[in-house]
Structure formats: structure tokens, C-alpha cells
Length: 269
Image (tube, rainbow, N blue to C red):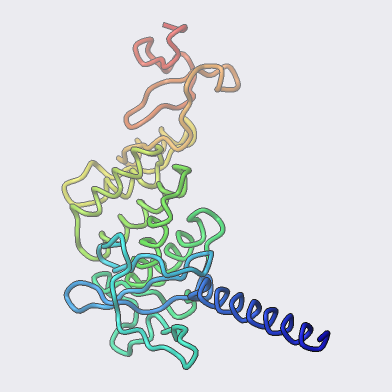
């Protein structure tokens, strides 16, 4: 009798373990951070990453337009014998070397990347590929940074600046100007303003100015001055200087060189 009971208990335990095992297998559909290819409109190819829980893939990202759907776009992703997706190297196509900004694709070394810096990692990689002339790689990486929806304005401003550089490199002046302005709307930056001014039909090119001496030197060269370190009041100026308005910004200067109407500090007027 006891043998029969022990056998029954064993069968129940085995059934329980099997059911738990099946549930566990079903709960994790992919490896967190894993990337696969996915279909995009127009017959192009994008990529999608497995979410942090491993319960499914994030929306398909199609480089030129970012994420184009709330749900992952069905794609013929190859599967292994166990049913799990087989990672497809992004950017491995022989006809895409990452230089074409109109054909964004992630470089092979980005496969499986998990940005734990709130968008800065993707942005830094985007910047490096801009410098290397790989605008297609850069565009895909900056799109990934945007998709993370950074909470801080700083990485977002940097991403917009990089996207502006990409559009400028691709010959899209209006697109570049729009991205530069988005960056400036988030925070003033002399480098971004200078880039915007350098576009055809833009403002007179300017040079970053940190001091009044820089302002004087720019004037002698016939250049406009972009304030790199803007003062907000006299209290932020050292050496007895005052905060004075200049074209495109404000700088600390000697009081005798700044008319009262140009004083930034309202208490000083």
C-alpha cells in the first residue's frame, strides 16, 4: 500500500515539475537584448530587440523613420530547432557599408548592445560614426537613442545635434536646420549655433566666445561671436566685470564697455 502511495506522489510531483518547466519555457520567448531582423515598409529591413524580461521583441525599428509601429512588424525571422529566434547580424549586408544616411543600419558591433546610460551610449556611438563618415550607421544609432525617449534634455539635445550633422552631410539643409533648432530649444550651445549658421541661407558664421577678449578677436576677423559661457547676472562675473549683451549671447565685460541698455542684470540698469 505504501509503495503505491509513494508511486502516486512521485507521479504528481513529476507532473508538477513538467508543468512548471513548460510555463518557464513559454515565459521567456527570447534572450534579453537579442536583436533580429524585421520587415519594414517598402521592402526594407529593420531590426528589433528582445525586451528586458525576455517575454517578446520590442517594436520594429526602421532606420529612416525610427519606430514605425506600436506592435512588432511580422518578419520571416529564422528559428532554431528549439523555436527561439536566430540572431541576424545587423549591417551584414554586403551592399550596405554604413555610409549612406538614407539606408540606416546598425554596424555589426552594435548587435546586442544594451544602453544603460539613458541614451548616451547610442549617442556617443552615433557621434563616432559621424566623424568616421559612416552616416548610415550613425543615423541608425541616433534613432535608437531617440527611441529610448531620454528623460534628461541633455542627451536629447546632443542627439538632435548629431542628427542635424547627419542631415547636413546628406545634403538636406532644411532637415539639418530643423534638428539644430530642436537642439538649441533644449539648451543654448555655441557649437550647435555655429553649425546652424554655417548652413546655406543661415546666419553669419560665428565663433565660440568665452571672454570679452574672444569677442574682440572675433570682431577683428570679421566674425560673429557665439557666447559659449553665457552670464545671467553681474554676480556670475569675476574681476568686477558685468554681464553684457552681445549679438547671439551675453558675456562678462568691463562696465565701461557695456551700455546700460545692454546690461543683463536688471538691478544694474
